[in-house]
Image (tube, rainbow, N blue to C red):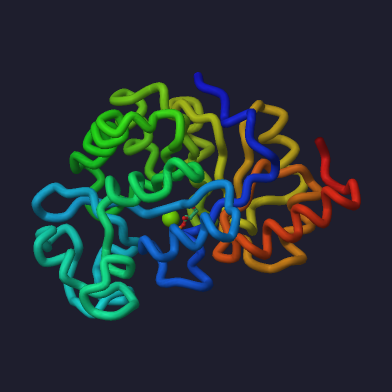
Length: 256
Ligand code: G3P
Ligand code: MG
């Protein structure tokens, strides 16, 4: 199993949906801003359009984050690409991007965490389609895959085993991890903030897993988790997280 980016600094600062406190989530603008704010990685939400393109948007519908209406999986890319996801109309920086476009834009500057969000269509072709995109761009060493859905992770691992996997653990259904952790190969466990107690962090790290906690936006929680030795946090505020990491390192209060 590939190691989880051992050469990178700890704790990793992962910009959740890009630098989403300061730019529209899951847009090129938010991902480029994460680079400017010196994040170590960006997280994005990938799913399939009706015509099988991998698009980057969090919700099952376009209603909350764009000026459109309807389920992403019932819309073709031609319709999705015309929507605005937060900026001026026709601005490609704030449109819904394709996964391949985000990878081309930022993968040389930081790692990209691709959350496979086919939760409304768990048997669709997303896992192997994502694997094909990653392989076609030759970015296997610059990405990792996450999902709450163990079947999706399992299917991805069969398609492209060299890419690391993070198993997302939801507050409402932590038993999914308990049940499927033995079946799904994974290098990282990615718990909700409320599940990340000192004891749990220590336990998972003792099992050799990287521990990446979501979504951490408050300075007190960042300081606490960093002091416990988590491997990374997902945050909407990467600039703040970088500042706190640097301060704690300076004060020698970070392990490693
Ligand atoms: O990767 C952490 C986070 O993205 C999982 O939750 O709903 O923000 O995609 P969500
Ligand atoms: Mg996500």
